[in-house]
Length: 416
Image (cartoon, rainbow, N blue to C red; front, side):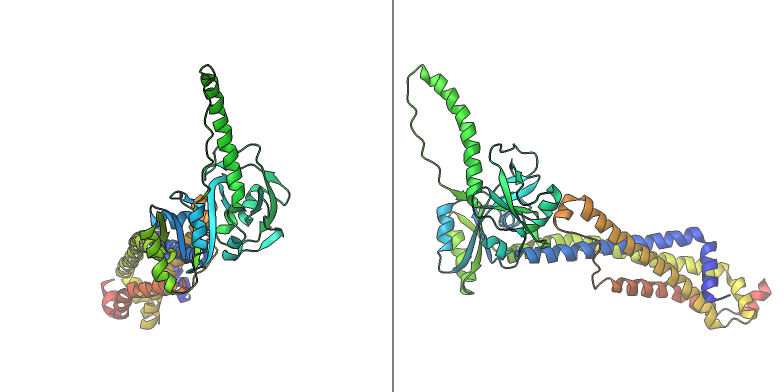
């Protein structure tokens, strides 16, 4: 019988122990795989969505919240800023490009973003079907939005008030789809893009509707008094935030400080805030990764104990094999093969579990789906897990293999 055949026979005889060792190694490997896959994809996605934007300007509040809401569309904005101040930023000599954003509505949970066509170029997106918006109440939708909602060029839809699904529907102000963007793998895939005038028009109609109800009530109450209501001045137009690109490197040193100290606005650097966020998240990630490594190490220790006990229990069998002509090296290789087989099985199962868990999360968890997380990617660091498992398996089998190599055949056979 070959070494592989013998190794399989012994592992099958101790099926429960073998299964537990493989499962323990698979859990550790799977944990590390999940962290590698999710961490790599999240960092790549964050870097890709922030590319080309040097500074984000918005209302005072949390800088990280401003970055998450304006760049990644995954948080609530810190507030609105006057349009006049956004226009002043666009004319600043230190600014090469200023792209305004106006938020407030959504469609089936996908955010409607009022902006200008420069936003599409800034996000490195291209039109797949139709064209970009040109007039108010026209919309160009991202690939994910079009697929999820079944939208095509020429369709109309009403927006919901608020940035999440379930808000009041803005009746009587439908958007018309004039274009669909090609998939980018970025945040623009899940956005509905329209002129800022569209956002203003929808909210003007929304407020007019509610104000009209109040006016009718007040007119009825005030009619008996015969009093006239003074005319109200229209509020100043506002935007949510502005994405800036520097004209020169010196702007990085001057512009953020000037905005944060000399105005009611807030400037946040995407690079700085993402570095801070990843450092905070990295603490928890390192903890989970350490737990995964601990499981792998525990598995190696368990394999060592199993092989050591098996060697003690099989001393007579191994001695008989030696007496029948098996060499010392063959006996040692048998134990190494058993360890490597358990290590390979545990690692393969762990890789499958890790990729399967990430793919499942990418399909079922909304946040993971929005980030484009998938288990179908294979990072370059994964082969190192095979090397790690093989090395630990060899180490676990080293002492039992040496012990089997040094077995005194005559002494063992004489004791029976």
